[in-house]
Length: 364
Image 1 (cartoon, one colour):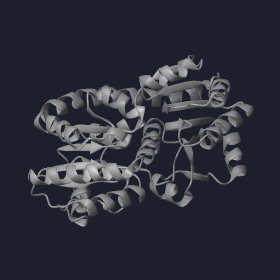
Image 2: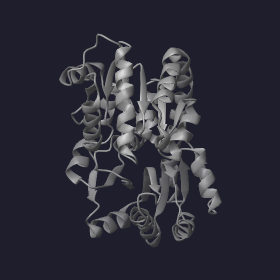
Image 3: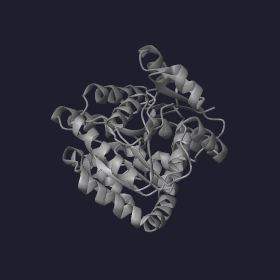
């Protein structure tokens, strides 16, 4: 039985990262149900319960090393793990896992990763030395490939798409049940908004609150949907407090497939987090992005979505104009999404096949 150890930003109740892990597991199990998959996580009990894999705690160094030593393939599982915007600590941590795997002569693969931003010269040097030893690098966007090329990584690189593009929503009965639990009526067309903390939060809250009130006066239902629990819930409730109208906030935690199903009920989605926009694309819901990171701009270009601009320059009037443009032309945007997501899903499925090829090549 082949053993795969997947590492990523798992166990933090971040819906995007959970969607990535869920998709990787499902894709690989669909090809070979006998694979034994373990995953690095912050919360072992949560990850085992949600994903049904063997959890390996981030805090237990011996267990991490043992799982790397015993696996047949180490997978860097999606997301922008190699970045130093938040700190260099996580970047060094993830590079160390690859270094240990190569010390034990293990195969290593990046599964639809993003890359960057990386600012520090030392970090770029470390990435060059370690990532150039990776057996196969599959990326979720062209910009990541360009950035890796700048630091001298060009071998075994394939541009695919985000792993979440193969995810399917929960069944309609469950989604209707969730809408009832959250008290969201179905009597009006719904616009979804997904927010996150970043910089200049007071300005962001003020603009989003005014936007909610504007949309509510247009006889549209507004629902604030979190992608990270409980952080985004708290931020959404702060925005609701600033509103003169009464938007709905999805307050309970739900699994990625359930969140995808909820988003599928929206007419359009305004989002800051990347995976809010990705979920919109998967659900064929036109999106308006708010750019807090270059990856947002890159993704919106990929799907021909509307970019309302830099979050630090967020403007109420401009945001509303972007929303109205998408609202008035949403059939056009839905048609574009329908075509694009088929192609992106196929790219991820091809990456899954390459995982199996890489596993089998060990015996050659």
